[in-house]
Image (cartoon, rainbow, N blue to C red; front, side):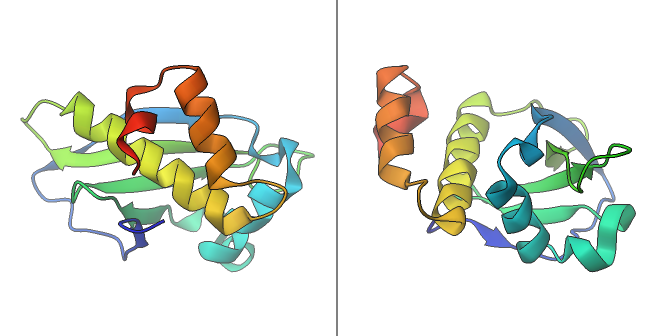
Amino acid sequence: MAGVTVVPRPGTEGKRLALVLTEDRVGHYPEFRDYFARVFDLDRLGLAEPGFVQAPSGLTYALVFIGRSGEPFPSGVEVYAVIDALEPIDDAAVDSDLWAILEWMIAGVGAPWSVGDLQETGRLYRIPAASTGS
C-alpha cells in the first residue's frame, strides 16, 4: 500500500524496539510466508536480519521472523516499532501504521486476499484505523 516501504536497517543509537504485534502462525497460509520470503529475501538471509519497513507516520518497524523446528520458515513474525529510547509510544500512530502494514501485506499477497475484504472486516470489528481509509 502507499506509504509503506521496505527500508534498510536504521541506525539504533538512542532508539529502542517496542513490540507492537505478534503473529505466530504466518505459515498457516503459505502465500503469506512466501510473500515475506520474497520481499525480505528470507531464503537467503534466514534469521540473520530482521526486515524493516517505514510506515505512513514516518516510524520504522522491524519485522523479526520466527523459525520453528520442523516448520517452513518463517513460521511467525514479531513487529517492533523503532522509537526514541525515552519517548512514549504514540498508540494512535502505531495503530494506523499497523493497519497500513496489513494492507500493504494483503495487497502484496494478492488473490484470494484483498485489501477491500480486509477493510470490510476492519469496519465490521470497528477497528478505528480501518475507517480512516489508509
